Amino acid sequence: MGLFDKLLAKFQDDWCKECRRPMEKVRKQLFALPGVSVGHYTAHKDPGFYRKTLYIVEKKADIPPGMYACGAIQYRCPECTRRVTVLDPFLPVRNEEKHEGTVVFRDGELDDLLWN
Image (tube, rainbow, N blue to C red; front, side):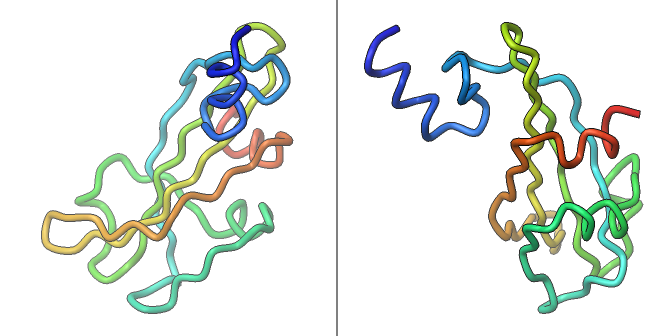
């Protein structure tokens, strides 16, 4: 493996940190964040917050006005089967999305949220 691949694995959320290979996108899900309204989003490192707060929605139109949403993507390494969950909280505003930055869980903390 070359130096470029090692650098990608270090800085890309969708590359396995163990095998240093690209991971497969296994599941994508949209969630609403009830109780988190305009101007009140704070990033959380505690996976328990997201397990308790997120609920599945089928489309952005199902998210009440003024409420945050969260896109979730779960990746799996085809070599070592390690899983990574990337959350992307955003506020839907007039057909646009105001993104708040991603939150990454690398140790299976949210596997039960997306894999059941």
